[in-house]
Length: 203
Ligand SMILES: Cc1cc2nc3c(=O)[nH]c(=O)nc-3n(C[C@H](O)[C@H](O)[C@H](O)COP(=O)(O)O)c2cc1C
Image (tube, rainbow, N blue to C red; front, side):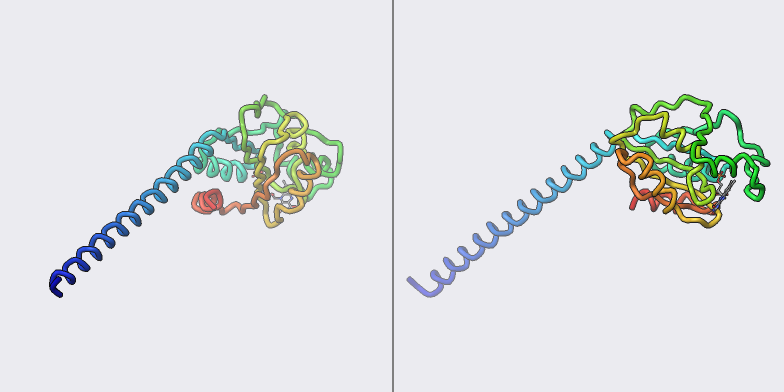
């Protein structure tokens, strides 16, 4: 066989091998892409399957605004915990030892009544919002926990405050009912923006 023919045969063999390899690789890439798409879709379906509620108490509107931002970002229902007896300005005067809010916070048995009926049965995930009162949850949040069986549900606390962190209130909530799957949650200030809330939810 002449040198030219041998070179030609070797060349054809190399070209055939390369085409085969590249097809294999692109098939592998497509398969991996398909798997990733399926996983992403499954995650989306799972997330969409979960029903979310944003449930909050707000005496002066700051926590309400944060709750609305959370609702805007999540596909959820917004539910207010409305006190049977509305808190007046003098009820909220924390400089007066005898103000209603201060007396409630100092009384371990205080459970201020809730005006509205809240049905939590259909929700898998609940964002639970409140203002910090004396470093802790307002007692009406404990009334809410007494009245609703959230065992096994995921609850994400969020709060607003002048400066106090969420940590102490988280301990109260976790100790109050350890059958709830409490996530660590977050504290927000009165200047919180929709963008800040959206990036918290997405991360
Ligand atoms: C009775 C009472 C106690 C408070 N205690 C604290 C506190 O311990 N630490 C803090 O940073 N802010 C405290 N604040 C301020 C509130 O947490 C803050 O203004 C909150 O954003 C109000 O939320 P709201 O408008 O949703 O009721 C207190 C407010 C009241 C009325």
